[in-house]
Image (tube, rainbow, N blue to C red; front, side):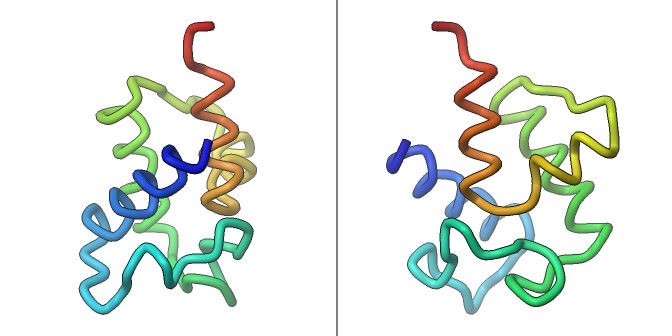
Length: 85
């Protein structure tokens, strides 16, 4: 799980072009939107594309997407739950 979270942070930084941000700057449980990383709705679309391209996971329900994209921790847990056992 720790390796997945580290990889996710790197992918988020790259996908959203967060040049001044390092993986260590992103707290696993900090909100990605609003007060936390300060992402917006356009960024959420980019993160959905990242999930689809990197992990072959398509999120159909926007309400589910909101829960999944709350934090790096929630994204990692969702990805892990979708991986074949």
